[in-house]
Length: 161
Image 1 (cartoon, rainbow, N blue to C red):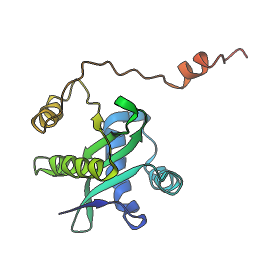
Image 2 (image 1 turned 45 degrees about the horizontal axis):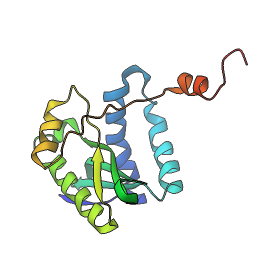
Image 3 (image 1 turned 30 degrees about the vertical axis):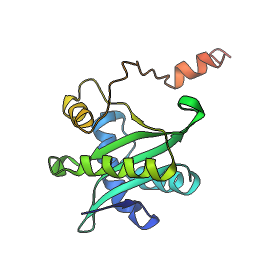
Image 4 (image 1 turned 90 degrees about the vertical axis):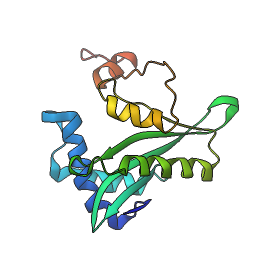
């Protein structure tokens, strides 16, 4: 298995596992499969600060991790944030998640990041156990999200406007 940064040539294979992830989390509201690759290409070409690492075996992407720098972290340092780490359902239990985490740590060191951070769903104890086994510490912080309608309200825009 090869753990490495994704290239433009990987995008069709990466789109397959990203579609699986999207269906897993979004269900019926998931982006149509036909739109995944064009969306991925658009993001990949226009966002050089996002690093995508893939786990590839025999011309198949088995998993990926996306890393984004955040500033500031403690003492005005940079933190590397793991936005997503996903392993295809039929490839789980093979150490791919751990390999992606170890590569993420290597990238954090290479980039001089003071921290490596992520969020994990409360109903995913298997992933949380992996992250803690690898040295991750629960910060006891709460992760909040604003969906589009809430963003509009917060920005002072309403449907009546």
